Amino acid sequence: MNAPLHNDTFLRACLRQPTTHTPIWLMRQAGRYLPEYKATRVAAGNSFMGLATNPQYATDVTLQPLDRYQLDAAILFSDILTVPDAMGLGLSFGAGEGPKFAHPLRTEADVAKLAVPDLDKLRYVFDAVASIRKALVTTDAQGRRAGRVPLIGFSGSPWTLACYMVEGGGSDDYRLVKTMLYSRPDLMHRILAVNADAVAAYLNAQIEAGAQAVMVFDSWGGVLEHRAFHQFSLAYTQRVLHQLKREHDGQRIPAIVFTKGGGLWLEQIAATGADVVGLDWTTDLGQARRRVDDSVALQGNFDPMALFATPEAVATEARAVLDSFGPPQRADGRWGGHIFNLGHGINQHTPLEHVQALVEAVHAHSPTLRQSVVKG
Ligand code: CP3
Figure 1 (cartoon, rainbow, N blue to C red):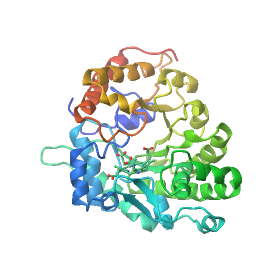
Figure 2 (cartoon, helix red, strand yellow):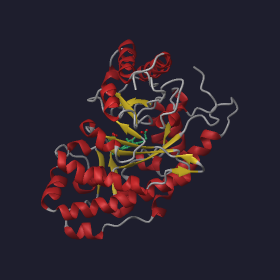
Figure 3 (tube, rainbow, N blue to C red):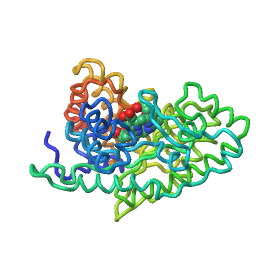
Figure 4 (cartoon, rainbow, N blue to C red):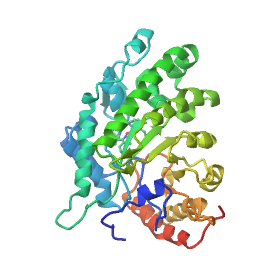
């Protein structure tokens, strides 16, 4: 399939408008499974932040998966942890160890000092957004890349950021952050309020710089107990959405909320006012769709580990995910929206040709679903 010059399929699906195929992009689509990513990372001093803080490198790396695969959206190359870094927590990525903060939040005094950062410290992110947008609308000698696909900006959710800020890095059991949540809920609420206001300002600045949709990654919302999820994660995601610019340059800016492990709370997540709810592989898309009666679009939910099967099995699984959502068009004339994605980030050992098989299967099978309708 040739890429159309102006492929707005992703934005249309987010807004539940008719599309000829189901758009696909992949969480963490720019990253270590791509040899060209590893090469650029070496050129940037073998450092993740070396890539992220340089708008030219960030642009190059964002475009790499689009040059290889017919993906329907680009996502800003950056990280959710840039915000706590700008708050002074001192982010580093040790070789093969994942993220670390030099100054995690452990005491009442640490929390009292926390404030929404000066957005100038994140200027490199907004410069990257502007540079990527420019690259996506510039025609090269072969006529490629002209308005190719929309650009997604993103942030961590207030809760997911708080996990890293209190733990000081990744965690298996969330012991420190949950200890604070249960023993000093006042401190946790203060962190989350500051994070929510910082995230809203950060996303709005990305929108001003040219992001055409925004996604909030609540990667660790699903580790919370039921009531705690509502009080400490969802309420603050809601606080972000309330402050978001939902229109820019006359265009609606869709907001996507992805809570890993959040399928049980789908109705409540949809009620935040998100345009799109991201789902992991534990939820059936067809049932999810009926639960929200197509009041939001759904994004997901292919198991990234299924990409390690044969290309034929990858294609079969991809069709099963599309079929579980069903025909986007309804008998009552409305449309549902499905954005095909993984249920979490792509694994760094994923075989390159299996990603190709996935994208091709989605683009080949999804038009056939448009020959029928589902009961509205
Ligand atoms: O999706 C994309 O292609 C855009 C870029 C992107 C990155 N991180 C680049 C990255 C996005 C959207 C993120 C989000 C992110 N970062 C999340 C939310 C999504 C999710 O997976 O739940 C989280 C929890 C983080 C925190 C983070 N950043 C971790 C835990 C790590 C180390 C482990 C890992 O997966 O690599 C990072 C580093 C990171 N962020 C890398 C990339 C490409 C690898 C860094 C490297 O090259 O060394």
